[in-house]
Length: 273
Image (tube, rainbow, N blue to C red; front, side):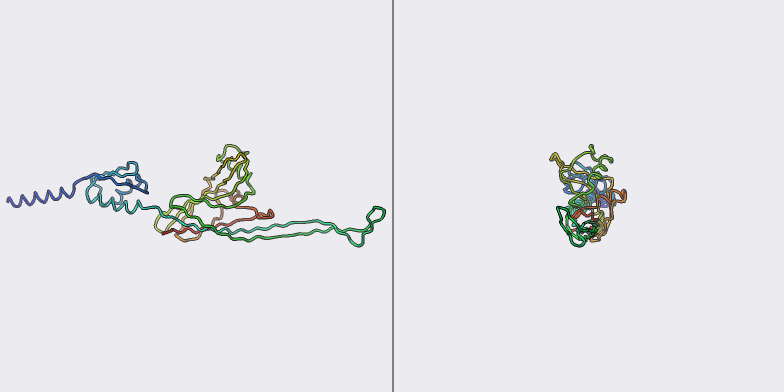
């Protein structure tokens, strides 16, 4: 009988030792500690007596040895350095112009007599047209969840219209701001939402230097568009569906000679190892 009771006591002591609750501190280097404190319990089979608190860049975890082991594994998975995403950007530019010229040339001999010109002349109309087809590629690299910027156009033909548009939508306080130099850009924000899947957010913006020498940026955040693509998949930016009028003016540039051009943009995001 005594042996049986001793066995029970030793067994109970082993159970209690295995379920001992300890407090440990873990440093979170890359991820959001509050998000991990919320997610971690959902990924654990048992949360009895488990307490996880986020304090600054640390997690305070009160739990069993088994629970601490799981927390460490979760941190290895979620608190990894963010990956870089390479985005190849291709610009296909097309456009054309048509110019009409009128000239006068003599028809037959011209006679100068007593200071007067005698002869006949004829008018001539000339129509000239030119086309532009150009493709350029640029590459940018952005960290997962961060933003990078690509240039859409060196010149902005509709800068007055776009500036007034920014004023009407509350992005600037004065409609009459004067640009010394300005370009059109896209802020590109890639985010890895799951293995092999990337969400890309695109925000049109104007950025440049004002006449007073200061720099300014107008970011049209209400026109931001999002697409979700597979790693390495190519997507085309057809414009900003919320406002076709804005899209038609923002994605138009000017080529040498003043002709109008239309630009089609394709993006290919790739997760770097």
